[in-house]
Amino acid sequence: MREISRQNHNLNVHFRYSRPTFEDRGKYHSVGYVDAALIQELVKQEAEYFLCGSPSFMQSIMQGLKESGVPDSRVFFESFGKPMKSVSEKQTAIATGDERFAEIVFAKSGKTLTWQPSDGTILEFAEANDISPPFSCRVGVCGTCMCKIHEGAVAYQEEPTATTDQGSVLICISQPGSAKLVLDI
Image 1: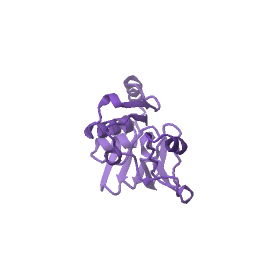
Image 2: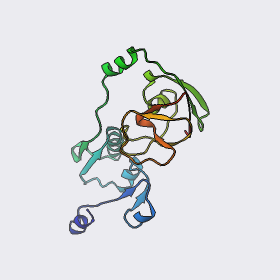
Image 3: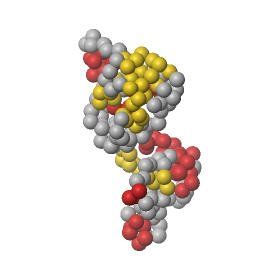
């Protein structure tokens, strides 16, 4: 990509790493997640934008471009992600009567709440209870929602694609796996 941008002066490339390692030094321009603020900083009105990512990421970036005055005709995208469960699948899970309850302590938020399977993932449950942890893809790909587990266990609905730190969890694709769960959220 860098070579292509050197050969074509109309192409600008900006690499942003969310969590660079020591070995990544010199390979990126900035640190953090791509967001509307970065787009507004880098945006060129005459440019065309080619985006690829999860639906929530795409929506956020497209909104940022729109707010910067970029017309929709200059924005092109391809979305990726795993298919979401349909409403009927969720209803079947609820109707089985296999209700397990778990106490989730959101340590930073100071909230202790009772979760049940119909509440969905830990991320969905947090959002439904006015807790706003960081997230992006909602499918275990990006790692944005990773948080530390202080106590208890989780059960992944599917194997995460993102690498997780020891003692941490991706809350977008997990549910409590123990009667009590304490998270650093």
